[in-house]
Each structure stands twice: as structure tokens, then as C-alpha cells.
Image (cartoon, rainbow, N blue to C red; front, side):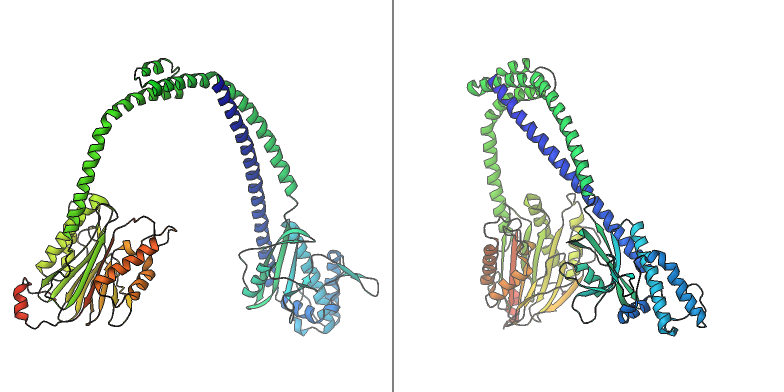
Length: 612
């Protein structure tokens, strides 16, 4: 009973922490979601309003004239504080003046701004600016924003804006006692705080974001849209919205939700604990005692007592059945453990034999043809598992042609190794039969596709080198690009357009390309296990590091070059595990130098006519 009380207390503490955590997370999530939703709505309204006003302004052909006049005669533009009531009077004053001086007014004005005299221009600018003040503030009210305004940079002043339509509506008193708006206030706008404002002006496009400001007007979002006429930037329409006025309402809503959730969780916790004490804890204690008895006595007969005390066929009853079955299985397992261990040792021994067989299938004697002086060649393969899917091969097709193969079978382990044996055998047999490399690979591909139920495939680089001329015919079927070094030069990747890998689909065409080797040139081929070797930071060795390792050892013969590259890979990877087979092959071409071609031809198996 003591343990039962301790378990109840632990569960009680857990549920309290869980309830508090749930309430806290729920409150924070609700607050964040509602705040983000409101902020997104604010930004959308800012974008819509500035787009609407900038469109309205660009349809007013005289707006650039208003800006130009305002810049030169700001002191003559006197807008009364109550511009909404004065707008009809301002329009009437302008129209009356035009009529008195012989002009005609229709739909605002049929006269061009440049044709007006100074007084007409002044009256027109006052009338139109009162009109635009009404438009701006009506739009701000319709879109439920704090305010909108129109600004343009001050010429000759660094990062300073002229507020042509000022949302603050500060006023000054004229000499005759009239209260007018204080327009044209020049304000330095710090680009660090107004990043998107200056971006909109400099690019002449609506920005991707908005500025957040904390100033005397509170916490606000500011969004600016550029206004242009005939490709000439005129100014910015900006809108602001306060994001603080809804925070109190959001907080109250979250608090109501937290209190309701707290009450629900408290009631649910009480009910849950009552059911747990009645339905769960006693049965768990019986199961615990029976299991302890088995651990002490190792008596398999205890299973009958466990089944008798399991209770209802619910989760705890199922747990009791499983404990009973587990005890029975454990006894059987102990009996069979020795047999399983012996079988594992046998499989390990067989894998070791498979590793040796696979290694023996690859050429490992260097030089393979000791009487040849036309080239030096060396290759290595390090499987990631006991057996791998990479393979290399090289063989003299006839007395003047050397075939080189580098391939990588998809997958790892025994299936890939078996597929590798098939692919290697087919490629060598077909190449020795004669024909172009493209024809050879096409035939091998068709044979590999037959019965390929495991959907394995193999990437292959096949090249046939004419030892006399240095001509190389190659096929790159989805494999890594080889690296070529010209005599006394640097290793560079030889990039050609890939053909598809083998065993994907029958009847495929494989692109055959060629390049030439001069005496002293070298070729390095490899599988993706080299470039994709990964260190503990999950960084790849990559092509760039490979070229650095090659060029750092460029003068070394192939049998010294490959260990140097492997050393560079190991230094990069360090203690990280090897996930892929690492296979490399290097050839250095010396050119045709045989003195007695007849004697050499007798030593090598003749090649059928038709190659190269």
C-alpha cells in the first residue's frame, strides 16, 4: 500500500504540472495566434490603402504640378484647419477667378496648369490639396487605420523627407489670425528604422515588408508605396496603424480561456484519480508482486497466478497476459540462445568468406601487365559493409587497347555485391567481343534488365584507351565525372553529358564521347563514396576538396596518388562512420613505346577487328 500511495502522489504531481503546462501553452498559443492574425490584417489593410491611394494619385495628371508648386511656394499654400468645410469654397474661389479672367472651368478645370497665372496656380493648388487631404483622411477612416500621408525626399538633405500631407495636422496662426496647417515639415528618417520606406523610394516598387516603429505615436506599422508619373518618381504614399489598441482585449480573452480551462482540467483530474485508484493501481500492484516473485525464483509456474489475478480484459489485463507470455518465451529464449549465438558466428564467418571472394574478383596485381610501358595504373576499393556494390576493372582488350571500368551498384550489402558480380562479368565479356563502347553498354544494359526484380541499377564509367594514339572512347552512364590532368598541369573534372544508369530500362541509348591523352597525361576515376564522404558535421568531402587533394599530389605515380587521396578523405572524415563504398582508379599514360610489336602481339590475346 505504501508503493500505491507513492505512485498516486507522483501521478498527482505529473497531472498538476501537465495541467499548468497545458494552460500556459494554450494561453500563449492563443495570444500569439490572435496577435499574428490581427497583425496580418493590419498589414493587409496598409497594403490595400496605399495601393488604392497611389492609384488615385497617378490618375491625377496635375499632381506632379502640385508637388512642384509646393516645393517652390510652400509659404503661399495656406490650408485651413477645417479643410473639409473649406473645400467647396476653395473650389469656388478658383473657378470664379478663372471665369473672371476669361477662362472656362469644366469638371475641375479644362485649362493646363502651366497656362494659369500665379494667382490661379495658387488657388488651384490650395483647392486640390484640400481635396487630397479629404481623400487621404476619408480613406484612412474607411480602412480603419491611424493615418496616411504623402512625402517626398528633400533635395540636398541626406535621408530627409518633406511631409506634404502631414497626418499630425499641426497648425500655425497667420498674421491675420487665421489657423492654417503647418505643411512641409522636414524630418530626418533614419534608414535603420525606415528600411522599407527608403527601399520603396530607391526601387520605385512596393516593398516586401513594412517598418515597425515605437515613437511618440506609439507602436505602429508603417507601409509605403511609391508614386511615379511617366517613369519619374514623385513621392511615397505611406500609411500607419497602431498595434496596441487591441492588446488589452486579446489579453482579457486569453485570461477567460485560461480560467475556463483550469476549471475543466481540475474537475477532470479529480475524476481521473478516482478511477485510477479503483480500476488500475490495485491490479498493477498484484502484477508487480508476481513479477518480483519470478525474478527471485525463476519459477515459470507463476504464469498461472498472473493470469488468475489479471482482472478485466482491458489494457492491464492484456499487460498481464503479455507478462505471462513473456515469461514463457524468456525460458524458451534462454534455451535457444546458445543455438542463435552459434548461427550468428557461422553467418559472420560466411560474410568474411564473401568479402574475400569479392576482393579476389577485382584486379589486385599491379602492374597487371608488367611488360607494358605505355601506362601506369593502380586501383583500390574499400567497402562500407562486409561486401559492397562498387567495383572497378581494367584489362587489355588487344595489344593496342586498354579497357577501364568504374561502377557503383545501387544499395549495399549482399544484394548489391551479387549484382556487382553479374555487371562486372557482363561488361568485361561484352567489351572483349568487340564493337564500340556504346554498343557494348547497350547490350549489357539489356541483359541486366532481364529478371531484375529487385530494381537494382548500376552507374558505369567505361573507357577504351588506344595505347598507340591516346584516343579514349568513353561512356558515362550516370557516373561521377572523371578528373584529367594534362602533363605538368592541374587535375580538372572532365564533364560530359550523362547517359542513364544501366538496368533501368531496356533499349536505352548511351552517348559515346571521346577525348585524347598525350604522354604524361593522367586520369582519375572514382565512385560517389569519395565525394560524398561525410564528417561529423554532416559536411561532404565534395569535388573541390577532391581536386585539392589530387593537385597537391599531382606528380605522384598512381600507386602513391590513391593512398594520398584516401589520407585526405580520412583526415576530413576523422571518426565519422563510412556510409558508402570508396573506390578509386588512376592511370598515367606514357604513350606508345613498344619496340617489337610482333613479340607483344604474341603475348596478348588478339582483338577482333572493328574496335576504334
